[in-house]
Length: 301
Image 1 (tube, rainbow, N blue to C red):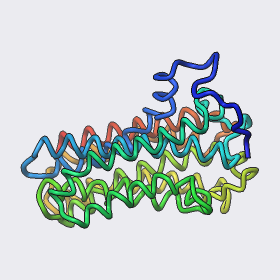
Image 2 (image 1 turned 90 degrees about the vertical axis):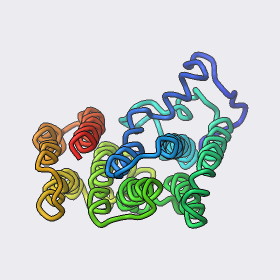
Image 3 (image 1 turned 120 degrees about the vertical axis):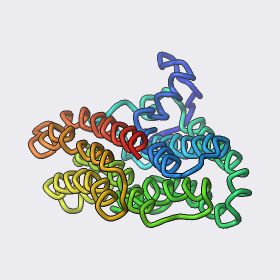
């Protein structure tokens, strides 16, 4: 375990406190939690903007809390070392002490639960368990005795929580019900969020092996990861087609399926990269792809 003795809250030579926490929140990943909120709201026939704002904040706080927890636990567990290929991590670099990051994680999750109180009143008692499950997922993804992300459950949990749970939950808050078309639509943001995780795990395969972080790519290899990435994007691109053909959605929605064409350069990089550093750009491109899909879907629905 990395030493935490005599660690200052914000160490000399690092970004200032606000910048350090902002970087640790990984703003490029925020779209993963916000996309299902926008899609679920866009599909609702009538929108309560107060509920939308609260759902937006809850999802954002859960995402930031998860990123803080990931920064902290990957450092404590030894998964983050200076051998990693990705962007700098705040705890690893000494910008924020482990104790301070742990406290920040706790506070942001508390903020999420406070924001969720009006949502729980609106949706009923079951939503309390859902909110607690979101917090638990954020912590246990990289924390606990057997972190979920370390035993190959990362993609399936991202698909579930950033897909049906967030999208259908948002729609339910607005309408009091969930329909099959909404469930089908919810799969796209989940799948595209998975593509971000897959690109990350392909990039970190070597360091993950050293840290005994048994992602699906560590378990089943690079080739599996490449096809998994392609599958997620291709399947997400099919969702608008299914909604048009089976549920009478506007044919204009098919424009959102064109994300597959935009993804071709990223898919090529995933299949042909030689240096894991090449995949840093794929993470950004995958997040942008999710943003574009979300914008098109919401506008054209």
